[in-house]
Image 1: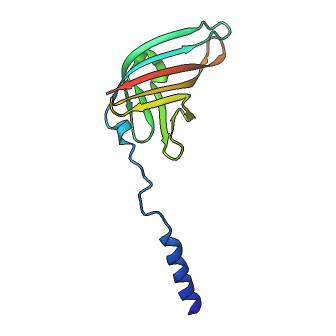
Image 2: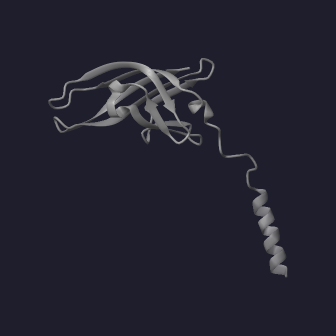
Amino acid sequence: MRKLVLFVFALGLFTSCEPRESTNTNTERFYSSPWNVEVNRTHNAVGTLAAADEDHSGTATLDKGGSFLYDISALNDHMYQYWGYSWSTDQFYMNWNPCLDWYINEEADSMYLNYDHYDYDPNSGNSFYWNYSVYMTR
């Protein structure tokens, strides 16, 4: 009986130290509605592949599960990307890698993302990274 009382006391002591606030932080500000986007993407020359510097505009939709869809057909398979945000490290992620630079301006309801995105050119056989600079506004 003493062991049972001691166990119940210990259990109560340990659970009383548990945080009572929700750890499921609301990220709805990212995906509540589509964003207007201005995209600049660049890459250096790689082998026989010429350097590129492209500007695009359109919309982007983020969903709670991490999908990031650019409504810009000129991006080809890069229309479909993935986002994430870590509240514990305050880091924004694109395609499972930390962004090189990013900020959120809550007053202007805007966001800036700068990240690299891997690509492969089947014609030349070269792998390379596009550098994306994305300005997002509502």
